[in-house]
Image (cartoon, rainbow, N blue to C red; front, side, top):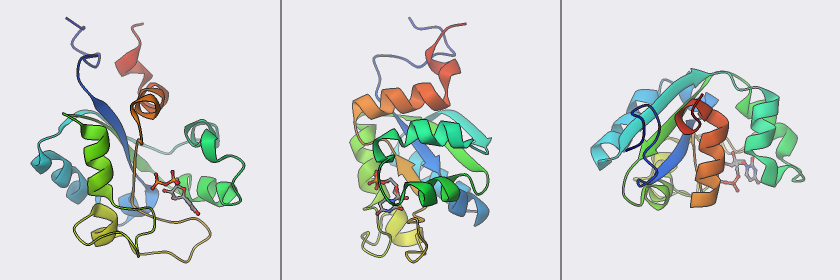
Length: 152
Ligand code: UDP
């Protein structure tokens, strides 16, 4: 049995970020509602103004992309909400709920398709992040919620 405050390694988890544009627009409750009514469980949740160091580590795979500086400006522009979500096939399931990267192209019914607005700023402001694989989820959860992964 894992200690209660640690994540159960036998269950699947993903890292969701409710990005600064969504937090600022008061969309946190709507996004958490969609996650909960889908049947997923919230296992960790914090409001945080992310440092550029944390965001650089989080988006390390994009660090050579031309949009990387604008992405860091966007993601550090205000508080965001970091969430650990648990559920069967939640990584893939949340990616489906999220919709594709560009909110203009994201399908209606998805979070980005329904709530995403702005596609003209240097970084694509698209409301949410969700881990794209089990390896990414483990890495991202350890970055944002070390207290849920590592014992003191
Ligand atoms: N992004 C951007 N311009 C691009 C591609 C991506 O500003 O041309 C931003 C956008 O906010 C996106 C994030 O970088 O969500 C990470 O990109 P990724 O390709 O991993 O998209 P996601 O998995 O978030 O849909």
